[in-house]
Length: 278
Length: 278
Image (cartoon, each protein chain N blue to C red):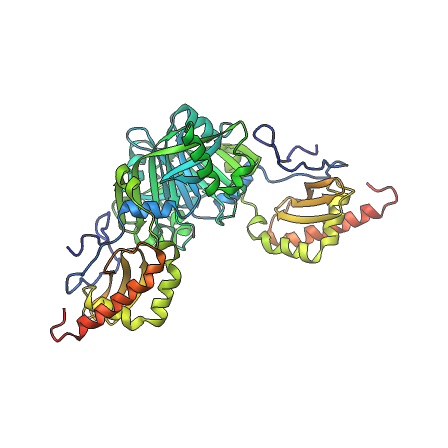
């Protein structure tokens, strides 16, 4: 089971990239958010995307748009006087690229998604819901959403591609995407991750040794937290590696993170105290 | 001549938007960067874009890419194992959307461009130049640029669309784009603009009154500086307005900004001291 959700390189020989130390024991619970959950989390974290539409010549046209969310479907408000508005009116095929709001020093290390499908003009009750959804995501739209040249468009998502950074990528079906929830932990995890690293380095090391598959770890740093567990970067005498420790149960609300990590710390300490180890 | 380069609304009745006070006199020198110059400035300010390419079904596909610049042409390095790499190999039509690096509270108020054309695989000396250009723009690419599945692509720009914010937009030809330079002032203007507003409010007001067409201005705030002049937001008893004052000569290096604004302040004070005014 361990390795199932580990990073997979999407191309050949990684060349002079660092060699990672393999785990010595199975990773106890490596569950992590699915591509659909990652996509729903990312799309809920911002209101800016780049739209790819088709010109009348069938050429691809990239342009910035803002969006709100109707369930997981982006809702755009575009003018038919703008090129992308004319494009959608003539051919509703479209895709949206959405990235993390921060600009990291290495952009390719950051998460991003592509949602592809067909844009639909909502009508009736769905138009009212789409209007409210767009205004909730883009409050500034109140100054133009009722102009006669602006129209609302809802993306019917047919295909989802998630890239989590170097070598982490997966696709999701429309059904999986529609059924998934945004992660309640990820958007506000930075402070908790800093606290774990600053004040609980011993507990993180215990987790890596007892549950993360690295009984020879000498340090463990938490790099990310989500609703299923913690990502760890470990040092061992055999080199560095990435691993993961999973909570006893999936987190449903952000406030549960503290108890979940306390449980992880206790369980790890108990396992390491057993005469036979784990 | 005044009004030539002023904002033009791209759609009908602005509804409840603010009514702007018209200038009382001609604006002395309203020259501002062309759409081609704005585009060259924006493309030089970051290394992240969204690519629109075509799937084998002819659908538009939006995906994040990084780029370097060969003159003004973006140079991409993409894997043919990635969807956009396969797309370009099958159909090289492409466009790139590039925005300002900062995420403002209202994204549609920020500048962005679309560059559209055809992606070309460089060869010979041009391949060497493209490789160096990509590495200069994306240093992290050194870890994968020589993988066998990665290829360099240079966008032959055929069409440029610039949007400067609400109601400010224009197109540029490929020739104008190729001939234009990035603005030497804009990228580092924030500090100078703050200094002008903090320490030279009287001089800015003189400029608005003597050169900017608003002899009844009561305050003037600088909102942006570029190689041609200063953008001003003025208050008058008739309401607020936007105007512009131009330097005596186009700035060629960032260091010339201070002398150019000193000249503007002196010229304005002299004009206002004349018995007949200007």
